[in-house]
Length: 274
Image (cartoon, rainbow, N blue to C red; front, side, top):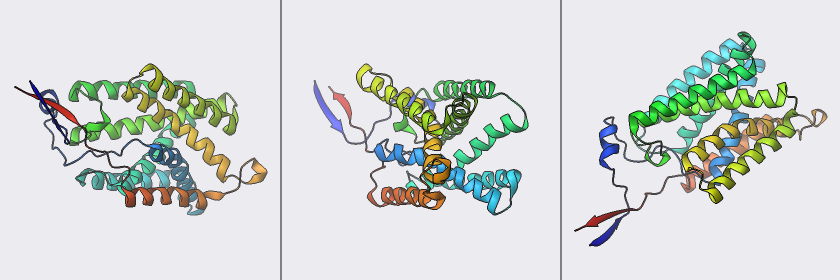
C-alpha cells in the first residue's frame, strides 16, 4: 500500500452528495487567527457606533437606521455571495452590518415588544441551535473549512446573525439586568472565552463548537471593550472616541487585505493507492 498527499482538499462523497448547490473556487470565510478575533471583537463596537451616529447625528431615528442598515446588508451580501473566494473587505463589511441588524432585532424585541432579556436570550439560543441542526442535516458538516457552496454559506451567515443576536441579549442580561457594568462584563466574558480556548486545547473540545461559543461571547466582549475605549473619561472610559476606534478596525481590515493572512490555507488530505 502506498500513500500520497495532496495540497488541495478532496471532497468526500457524503459532502458532494449533500451539497448540490454551486461550489465556489475557494473557502468563503477567513482563517481563524488572532487577527480574526481582534477584528471580530471590534466589529460590534464599530457597527454600533455607526448606527448611533446615523440615529443621533443624521437624525434617521431607530426605524430609519433599521431600514438603511438592512438594505445595505442585503446589497453587501449579494456581493459576498457573488465572490468566488474570501475577500476581507467584503466579508468584514457583512459582519459589521450583521452586528448592527442583529442588535436592532434584539433591542426591538426587548424595548418595543417588552420581551424579558432572559426570554430573549433563551429564544435566540434555541433558534441558533435549530440553525445548526438543519445545517448539519442538510450538509452533513459544520466545518468552517468547507464554506464553499451557496447552501453552506447561507447557513453560515444565518448562524452569524443568530449568534450576534444571542450575544447582544446575553450581554445586556449580564451588564444591565445583573448590573455587572461594562468593565466587569468584559472581564467575565473574556474569562469564559479563555476557558473555552483552554478546553479546546487541553480537553479536545470540538473545534466547531469552540468557535461558535467564542463567536457568541466575543459580541458582548467587544461592546464592553468598545464602550470603555470610546466613552469620555468622565464616564469611566478612555475617551478615544468612535473615529479612532473605527480607524483601528479599518486599519486591521486593510492589513489583512494586503497580507492575505486571513485566507484559509488548503488542507492536506491523504489518499490511499493500491
